[in-house]
Amino acid sequence: MNHLSYIIWDIDPEIVAGTPLRYYGLLFITGLILSGWALKRMLPGTRLTNEDLQRFSLYAVIGVFVGARLGHCLFYEPAYYFHHPLELFLPVARDAYGAYHFVGYQGLASHGGVIGMMVALLLYARVARQNFLYTLDMVAVVAPLAGCFIRLANLMNSEIIGYPSNVPWAFVFVREDMLPRHPAQLYESVAYLAIWAFNLFYLYRRNKTMTGSGFFTGWTLILVFTTRFFIEFVKERQVAFENRMMFDMGQWLSIPFIVTGIVLVVLAIRKNDRK
Image (cartoon, rainbow, N blue to C red; front, side, top):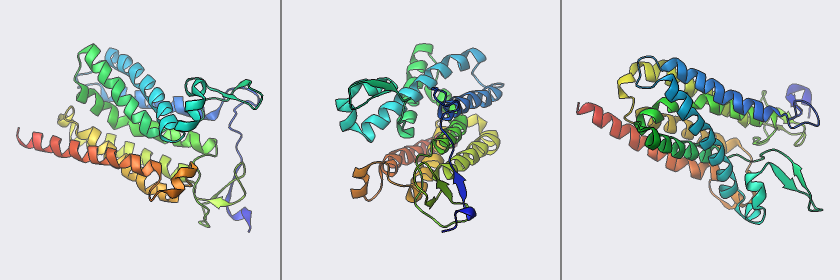
């Protein structure tokens, strides 16, 4: 096999060798910051202020992180974290000698992150006496931009790799093996960037008056998780128990989000038609 015809990917996940500075954390934070920036550009003419943005952004960031971490632990490796509860909350791992070492948070699930963000924004809405769906709709428009950077972070970690493939753009993930594979992380990253652009520059501009109806939240759930469902077909299974399943865990978890999105869009359109 001639590897020269493929993209050789051997990026060190550590920005500075021997330090906790990793591309994953940098890109994760960058995605959240840029999503906040995009949301700030949307504020003029809405019910939200810069102060509102600062407050609910804190809730959303905490919700995304906690939800993503709990989601991974509960959806993918519940048995392991049941016996290693400290590793669920702290970025450490225990070696064979019983000593703990800093390893970073290895394992964040996007489905859990979405749930965590929604719960956090619901709490914010109650505390600040804001309209929950209005805030959620605004965040939903820009959220795929964060997803774009998170998948780039997975690429830098050489994780969530695709099945072996001979496509011209295949990546050889040297830190995994020497097989050319679908760059599934890149597929998702590009798709989420396209969804963000569609949301912001087309869907939101044409339907601003529907903010607060759940319309944008619904469409974002439909687009993001339908994309996720189909890209999963070219991904390697993440955990062994998925090999016994018709669909992998990511696909099964995506279905309720897609259905919820359809319900929200239908209800929003019906409500708008009655005006």
